[in-house]
Image 1 (cartoon, rainbow over the protein chains, first blue to last red):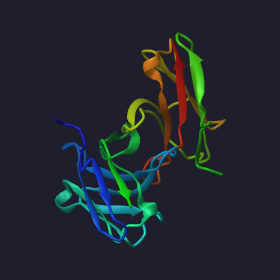
Image 2: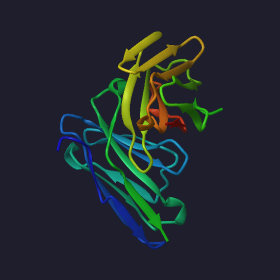
Image 3: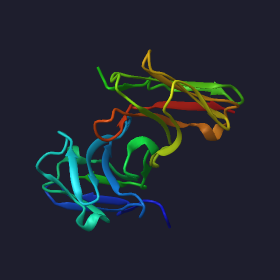
Length: 114
Length: 110
C-alpha cells in the first residue's frame, strides 16, 4: 500500500484522557501535515513537518496538542486532557517538498470525546 | 473575511447537466489552486490543480482560474449521481500549508 496510512480509524475516549494518533506518509513525500475537520467545515490546518522539522503550528494547536515526526518518517499527534470540543476527524496528509502538487490525505482518525 | 470562501450549497443539478462550483480567495499572492472531492465520511481526494489563468481540462472536469478577480471554479460536465459529494477548494498562498474552504455540497439528481 503506497498511500497515507492513519491509525486508529476511530477512537472514543473519555474527557480528560490522553490520546495519540499515528500517520505513515507516502515514503517519497518529505512533507507531512495534520489537519482537523469538523462536520460541515473544511480541513483546518494544525501543523506541518518537513522531514523531522516542525515548521509551523496553527494557533488552533493549544498546548494540549503536540506532534512529532522522529527521523522524518511517521508522525504522531497527541492530545492531552481531551475535551469534548476536540471531537473531530483528524486528517494527515503528505506531499512533495512544495505545495504545488497538492496533498494526498490518509483516511483520517475520527475522535469522539464523551 | 475568510481566506477561502465557497457557497455551502447544496447545489442540486439533474443527471447529465453541468455543475458549476465557485471559490473566491483573499490573498493576491496565492499561487496554486486545488479542487478536492470528499464523499461523506471519507477523506478529501485531489481531483484538479491549476496554476495559471485560464482553463484546465481533465476528462469531465474543467478548472478555471482568474487571478485578477481572485476566483477559481470547477465545472463538471455530464454530471453523474456518483459525483454527489462535497467539493473543497484549496489555495496555496506560499506562506505555509494549503488553506481550505468549507466546501460546496453537490447533489446530482438521477
